[in-house]
Image (tube, rainbow over all chains, first blue to last red; front, side, top):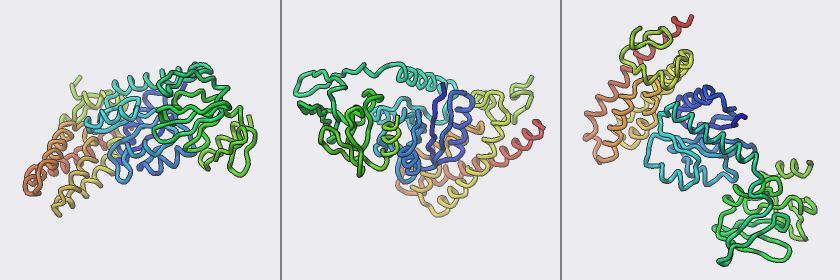
Length: 229
Length: 130
């Protein structure tokens, strides 16, 4: 099993150094290298990667600002020479934090973490087809089959079923990380849909239960791929 | 065998052999690649650092040094990385350029010296692998 990865660092020798580590580890396929966050963001809008090796201090958009802007985040390994950033890095749910210059033994431990996480993701069914949400102080069990779509509203998400709407304190990003991705698909910055409930797709809109949900340009290709299966 | 040997190649004693070995194992061709990158990119940043120093631009100099800092370790000079960090921390605490000037002069001289060292070592490595 190989991990596809991209490297984002404005310093060329640092990128080369990490590239060499990835080659030496033998567990990576380097899908791209970028000297700025903007190009990396554009790449991730149209491509997937298992791992993002990300520097923090870069001109223009820094590493943390980049994480705010990407919609579907791969596993993130933050690499920087400033340990001050470690706390902030974990607030962004990064998988690991490596201090420059990276030590190879430490890098192998990170690789093991990443491989384990990928193996777990491919063997589990993501909490079966049911999941729990906390709404109005109660823990409610929802069946994936009942959920038509999920809408992100800042610090809240709305789960829409044919009978009811549930509001939970969460972000769409964290829902996306836990949800069964064989059933649910993100089609817009603010919407994840149950693909089994899609009635039609036209004019960049999905129809589910007579509700129209927009599909963004960035997600259209993936949606079409899913629908053609 | 000498303490400065990697894969039968005797490294210059000014480089941290154990550190290089921990980074690259016995892969001398990898070391060459990284050294060559250093000679291109870090040298280019160094020219910028010199300009920042001449123009007494404290903030810009600090940023340039920060960017260069890890690359010294990549080529077996972790001591230079530490010294660069010290100067960066000093830049963060002072408001007047004159307060960092002496330390900057020493650091920039040391960095400049590293280029001829790494250049010579790269040539020797390439000859060794032929």
